[in-house]
Length: 174
Image (cartoon, rainbow, N blue to C red):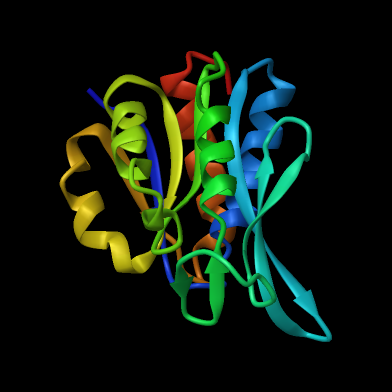
């Protein structure tokens, strides 16, 4: 039984933008959305970090930053395990749709992140973005979710495709 949508594609293609647009439109129809998305932070045009943002109120925590001095490293960034833990607590709220942006190398630094996400995939309606490095992982869940492979050519149409698919799953009129 299909539970949700996985969105994958190269960095910068628009996965987070899709999540923000789709969740905004679903909330307008009364869907209770819980979870988080990830925004990159730039200074002088250079990416310096990533923020985990609550989909409901905009509250955020640093997921990773070049100036952090503690935490495991992914590339030039120190990852804040406590921020990931905070993001996971957002998934404990009651909702109609669970949003996780993203399943990727930084989030994997949390020892139980994947177990928590797999619990959502197996039991809840979801919208999850998946880093290209995690494509083998998502293949094991193909029976539970539709995969949208985002590209620059299809990213605008993919917003409507994800939205319409989720509306059917959530029994919301188009």
